[in-house]
Length: 113
Length: 110
Image (cartoon, rainbow over all chains, first blue to last red; front, side, top):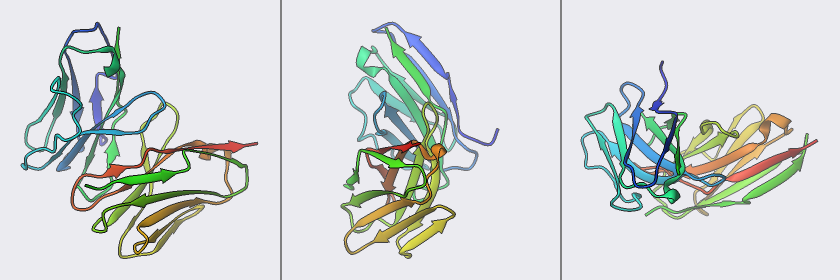
């Protein structure tokens, strides 16, 4: 499809396990964002990639969180040693440039038991 | 860095009436202001956006106004309908990452 694709759509895991979330942006989009959205809450910025520039990691809540992006393609968000407070929907968005409309994926709903 | 404040956090209006959501931003260099609508359980979707070289933009029942001097912008929805019930997010951006407000939950009352 032509939109932002995220996988898995749902992930249930035990506390302490590592998880990896994937985002396929729209082809040609240079900017990619990760957000966390807890139930009934707003969009919490996590990390931002723009082309080949160094990513803006200022929103990552702890060193258990990391993200990578290869060029202008797929990005993965990794959460190590998951905690119950990590339970949330993780949304990815991409845009043609940082100052253009963002297109969101459907998100990954992460549940930590 | 940029900071975006959004009010109110919750808004209830009678069907057919107008709804107004207001946002302020802190960085006078911000030049792009999108609005997103998020229905329950769904992804946020862009509904309208405005750039700093214009003061107002309309799209059918939706309009956005921008006051650069006061650093605030507003979303206006006229003739509200049940399908307008959702959470609305404002955002501001310079040539950098987009910063979102905390959202407004809009309820359309029958």
